[in-house]
Length: 163
Image 1: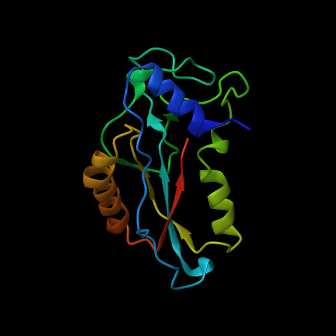
Image 2 (image 1 turned 60 degrees about the vertical axis):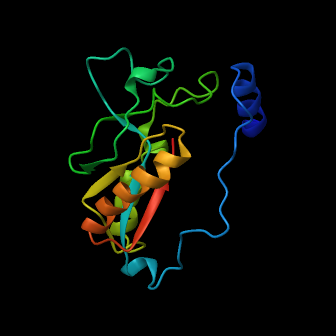
């Protein structure tokens, strides 16, 4: 187990930042499904970044690459599979090489679920949401922009797969 909250708190304290205020809400902006999953169109939402070949290594096991971060919500077709990477994310590189994108971008598994009738359909585009650590920007900018992309595709549900 990785003590994420404690580790993050200690990291930012060492950097001289005030105590982090974890996001909390009196209510959640979610709702129950109104029809069975097998009748729903599902949108995949990810925090993976579009590959930028002009930047340093972004491949599996690459060192943390802050330059590869992105700051605007995007939508990309799932066919052909977009080249998305996770070098901009802080994950345990000592124990995980992240060399199988299917572990953090489950497009193939969702297509199988669509094929066997578990889910009605997969939206034609996935939606990418930045991980810029600003609650204000997430609430005021990124969440509404992601919702607009999702609603444009006329989907019933969204699956957030953070990296």
